[in-house]
Length: 365
Figure 1 (cartoon, rainbow, N blue to C red):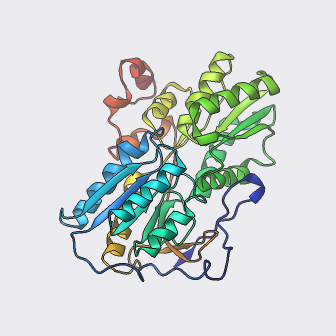
Figure 2 (cartoon, rainbow, N blue to C red):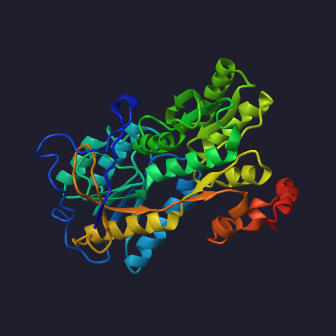
Figure 3 (cartoon, rainbow, N blue to C red):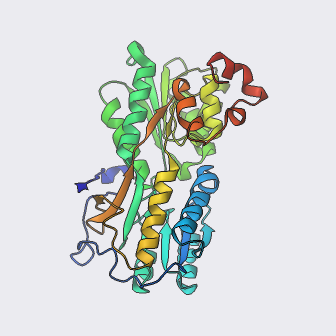
């Protein structure tokens, strides 16, 4: 069994994934001790963090719901709520799930630290919690996400490749994600491990709530501070922010490589036209399937040993059973072999009238 350890600097306002806390909190995780013994007629609470990013409603929710249906012969019920980036609202949604007597909760936390007490309340009520995509604090029973440090490394390596011999001819801007999201800290860690020493970082931001409009404002500030002739590239932690960044760059007449993540349709289309250099393609089906498998097993009082082959530590718990999914750098060269081949988008969805000529130019027909 492979053990994955994650650690980030507290000074970066990120959530550390290295174990700490009291002896009671930091004890080895028991993934099934409080779960009831049930059959297929289980009730699963699904709590997603926001609807700003297209992935949650388009991919994560339907994939999880579908897999739970398959695993429970159509008898499992999914009770869904979206926090719309409001940590207080998500805490209330956990309370509602407890009142509703769900058998297990799949939780993608808005704020991984703030949700800790809610996770504890669920645990006290005998409801196991699977952390989805972001590692929440508190007595989590299982966790599934992508290898987030590798995501950042993939982005950083792609940006270096795009810059080539010009990597030190100017300065780059780093647009990281929200400081309340532990994943953002890991993306940043991975990116810095590749970029530090190879490029000059002129400005760096932790972008509030991952919002494209905040990234746009940050980028405008960076352009004013650095000067448009000195910016040679932008590290953007996801596609939504990349859209806001590119709007600011175009307004200033700047054309430089910009990274992204999530392979959102708009991001893929910007890659087709060359406005965005790359995205990170994260196959959501394996992540969603793992969350569903863990949730069903926990609700039925079963061990996670056959599902989760990794272990991770959070600031409050050690040895959380985990499934970590790999990622791919998405560029013009492999759109057809990734998102199209996997059925995420059709060529027709990508190559609408506005993008038809650009698609033909790169052989995407």
